[in-house]
Length: 88
Image 1 (cartoon, rainbow, N blue to C red):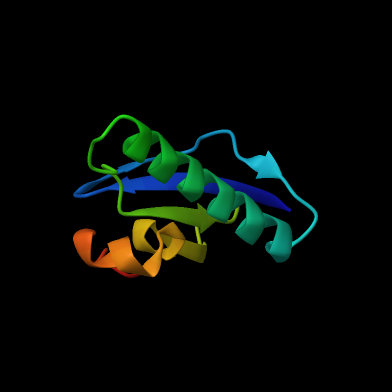
Image 2 (cartoon, rainbow, N blue to C red):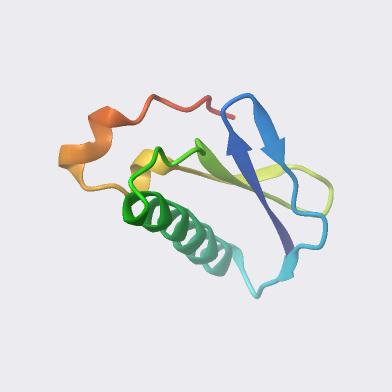
């Protein structure tokens, strides 16, 4: 299955136009968590806001499959510092 990993940046969405071929939805979930974690780690490393609200995973038809919010990959003690992202 081809999955597209879009990045929701406050009011904008940066679209993944190439996608990744993955075996199943569980693999897509894992990749989405990994990408969200990498973005949060980078923000913490450089002392800045995460700058993104969520990783949105869509199928080849553009239908949403997974939503991983920036706050979902933060320790509980830091989650209050991230505003709630818009849900699908």
